[in-house]
Image 1 (cartoon, protein in one colour):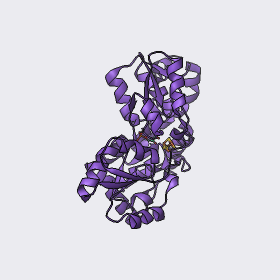
Image 2: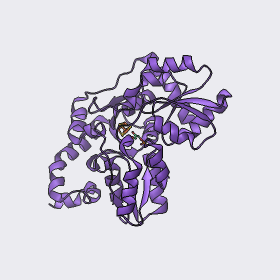
Image 3: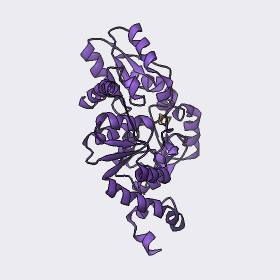
Image 4: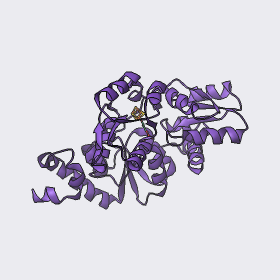
Length: 326
Ligand code: 13P
Ligand code: SF4
């Protein structure tokens, strides 16, 4: 029991689980910490990872943009991506000489799966001279066909930069039709969308928000821009996962509803103890494929390394580096 209480990870996890449950995780957590040292590895964890990963073993946590930025400066030989496959690919693009491991290669994304490189070439032929912007939630093969990458944290800036640089008032933004529509509300640039959607965020409706407001007094509603426009219009603030966390840090609302993936509220609840988190969330089955067991297995076996064909990687890297430079 004394080990449980003194383990620094438990301070953040006590909010989520009793000591007995933590004890069941302790062996994996200790093994992962030891393996990180032996392999000179770091773990990058997306904000949607479960609390035991986020608070227990991650070295760096954040949204897609932060994880991409951190991947550039990572001082390690091995990067384990506790996130989905496109995030691991992006880390590998930015660190071609490092080993990037994904603990479960099946951790996909409905957005990344909604568009192929041939689709992008079709858009290029259909809209000559119009810059093509790919959301980071795409495969490296798709990134290799576009001019810029963007995330939900910088979509407006990238759209405006790309249009200005090309001397046009239109851009193509793929593959998320909702991110495209929500970004279009913030800029004069015309955005031509693709018809993809996030299977987690597209399920939220305006009625969900009305229900939260009816049920909870004084609730501040924060939504991810992958939600439909009607949901964003009904929310008090829209932003990337890091944008939502910043909003809470700045405004310290008494009560918040995060209209996004479930683990986000769990992770922030440990950080902002005075805030009451209402949880009308949807689970991302892809993010939930990653767990302590397969992180440990990846570090033990070094299996699950991301490989990207060098020519394709060089082309895909250009769009990501252009984004990071903006
Ligand atoms: P963020 O870039 O906001 O973290 O979003 C990533 C994602 O997959 C949201 O569904
Ligand atoms: Fe993809 Fe949606 Fe899951 Fe994010 S939450 S990884 S966009 S399916």
